[in-house]
Length: 635
Image (cartoon, rainbow, N blue to C red; front, side):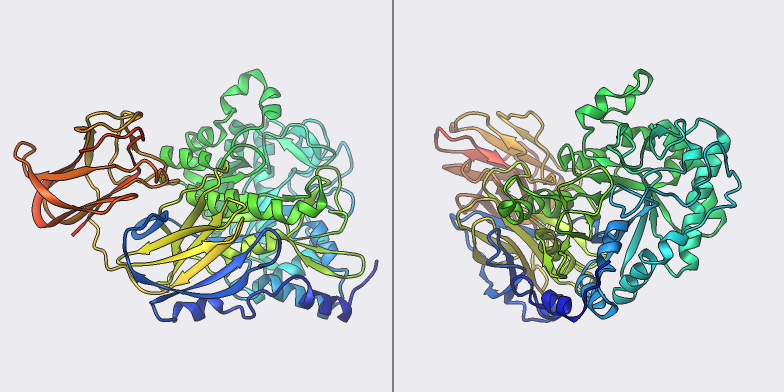
């Protein structure tokens, strides 16, 4: 096998356009004056590739016709864990084509401080394996090994474990997840690593759980901590194309987890168990092949697990990108708000015209993975292969068009693919422990040509906003943070990260106990100050505007309010053409309040008066609808 040396090292350093020079950019930015935000850009054509675009100045917040992203650090969502990929058997083989110095340079680029900090590792072979499929307890056909006497991770000691140790050394924040594509063949109904399912036997469930336990312990002895486990990759893929896989219905997964959870506890391991580990929604082909007595799992597998006795051992649910929409994760969160959500696999893919691959991948991943996932409660964003060769391999069956975070060709040249940059827009700036906070987003994962975004507050207090212009033409947006605001024009298709320091001066009032009523509404429910994760419309007239139409907010009790804001959110054209705002303590006697603002924001200045009810009433007619996405009140 060819080995690449200093030439490859040089190629790595010169490949693609400049990237932020230091791995300390977010730390440096966190200490900049609070009157500026620092900007990094990537663009579909490759002109910008995590390029430092300088700073933009904050000014006083003013109403503008430009769509305005309101970042509200006082409304918090999930805490972030990390961002990364997988060092598959194929990735390891490709990286080991370099000599040690060149390989170290690649690893430093990928895992240096403020870089990749999460890896999802196959337990045994996957479709990306540079040799015949294997597990850690393979025995001759017809034999069994319930005591796991032949268990061995010797295969991983040559390449995979050294790479994992180096990654952890370079980035101490690294967390690792282990996922099996198949149990040993002797545990399965068909005696093969490909297809079949787990034998329905208590002894097999115990043996499989013990197999996963021994993997964690064996890796621990080699200096690699395993923080998370799932019990089966893509358990509803019943017909893997020539690579290891298995049908594992939710009832069998629960039986394995009920064995595995206590084993981890007894052995004083804090490894967390994640359920499901498959697509946002079940692929129609998988659904069509569901046995008649297991149809309850169709588009309901995570719920079946979380409603089973095994739920006590399940820390969260893992998702993939290959079918469905990220909103499925919010739907699950709403059903099980105490259970965490992780996004654990999505591969880039070569476009029909390879020349479009970088552009297509950057835009799709920006919408669906970087922003779509994180706006829908995912604590992680994980790509598939860390590194592949120029033929999108090596691989055994499965995907022939999957791309890696980086590509290494036969000459040893390293190409940073779009996945490198999209991941970088999160990993380099959003620290583990950061909290996602509320922000107005105008775009959608399905593409509507607007700007979509997601915001975070880091443990050091810095704020990070990641925004993507879905349109091929430049678009201007304003970003409001408390009483400060800046405007920025995003290049067509660009992905941008903004970082700034400082706290919002706003003192919002928690919407506890708030309710809303309206004279006319579609849909009928009008929850106040309950921005959903994609900031979609919460209230709409469903028709043109007529004088006298109103939206009324009940704050639950009398309290002193400084101002109240009705925000149209993404429906910026559906603003009230004329309005008054009145307030009351009892819902009977109403007094006028000073109304300010037009366009996206309709604001009532309550000047600290005690109120319980606030009503916005239309005073002008218009053929345009009237929509409200968010209602915010401040002291």
